[in-house]
Length: 304
Image (cartoon, rainbow, N blue to C red):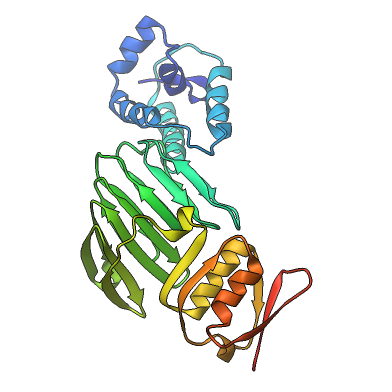
């Protein structure tokens, strides 16, 4: 049983600062097994491509700055208090999340701890727990991203519209607001949505898309998503409102329109480097007039 001022026994153990006698007594204690699990999680921590190590440095700086104290036996009341403090620390580490968002109009590349590459389209967010990564390879996604997953244990991407489970593959997920579309480029993946009782396997060349609440499966022959290197976004029979959301993500614009002005579905593409051309590509085929304000921040849809 241990008590240390400021509950530093685990911190000193993690940093290798226990004396030989302290270490032997600690490893014989009932808490040792739980601390071992935590240490394994900490070893899984790896700096992501865009992480500046700020939080990690703060954690280790706090460990190094704590003063060692004598190890003494606890009375039951003090022992309970020490365990409670340790649990608070464990909870803080277990629920620690790294969050990253690709800026409006920009694409980003993010490297996960297992070397999985994530290519994020504009205005896309991901989050995950690096400490538990070895035990739980789960990514939360809001937006559009291409995943090139390394071989290894089960890997999951969770979205508001369902979960994608993979072993080692390449796939693109577009999960913005009320839109969901999944393309498989390599390997095999499983899409599931327990809320809607939906489940389907995809292999190379397969696409699934949610229309209303219906899961529609089709085929594609692309090697990669058009947004990655071609600098354009492609749509097939997609609600115009969702295409407008994509325009917002790439150009940082807003729309001013009456609800009946944005009806219908769009099939086609728009480029990412020319706002005027992008607007023409979308609205001219739809038979919709538009006006771009002088500051190029607002698009007003007009009736013909």
